[in-house]
Length: 260
Ligand code: DGL
Image 1 (cartoon, rainbow, N blue to C red):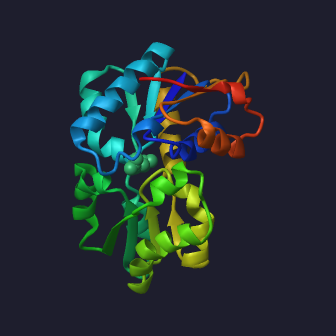
Image 2: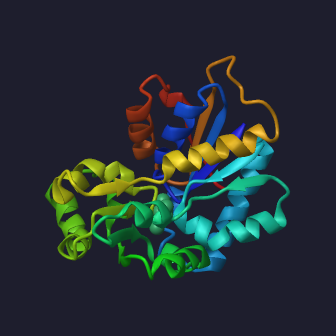
C-alpha cells in the first residue's frame, strides 16, 4: 500500500499521477486539512504533524510514503528519513527542468514561505542562479482558496495576478508550481499566463520516482484495480469534491474524518 499525505487536498494532484502510473496499487491518503496551511507554520510543528501522520500510515500498512506536500518535504522529510525505516518520496522543486528549458532566461517559482526557506530549495536555487533569473513568489491565499474548493473566478484571478504578474512582466517563460495545491488552479493560471508560458507541475516526475522506489521493494501490482481510503483531519467535503473530479467512481463512504 502506498501512503500519501499533504497539509490538505493539494496532494490529490500527486495521487492523480500515481493512479495513472500505478492503477493496480492500493492507496491511503491523509489530508491534514484541520491544520492547513503548513506554509506559515514552524518546522517543529510540521515535523510533529508529519511524524503523527507517518505513524498512522505505517499502521494502516504503508510500504512507502509519498510526502505530497512541498512544505512538509522542505520541513520534515530529512527528519522522517532519519527516524522511520520506511522509504519516503518527497516533492522536488522543479526548478532544474525549468531552468534547463527556459529560453528567456527568466523562471518564476510559486510556492509557500516554508518551501522557500527549506534547504532543498535554497540549494537548488544556488545551483541555477548563475544560469537563469529566478523570481520566487509566495502564492498568498492560493492554498486557502483551493481548500475551500474555489478554483476559479474573480477572487482567484486577483490572487493569481498578484503573484504571477511580476514573473510575467520580467519575461518568465516557465512558472514552476512549487505547491501541490496549485495544479488545481491550472485553468485560471493559464488564463493569466497565456499559451506560451510553460506551467511546470512536478507531480508526474514524483509519481515516476515513487514507482521506482516501490519497484525496488517488490514488483508493481498490475493485477487488480487498487483500493483507496481517504482521511481528513478537517472537513471531508472538498476532499470528496476534488478526488471525485479525478475519479468519479469513488464512493462517498471512502472518505472519513479522523483525529490524528
Ligand atoms: N500542498 C502544500 C505544499 O505543497 C501546501 C502548503 C501549505 O499547507 O501551506 O506546499
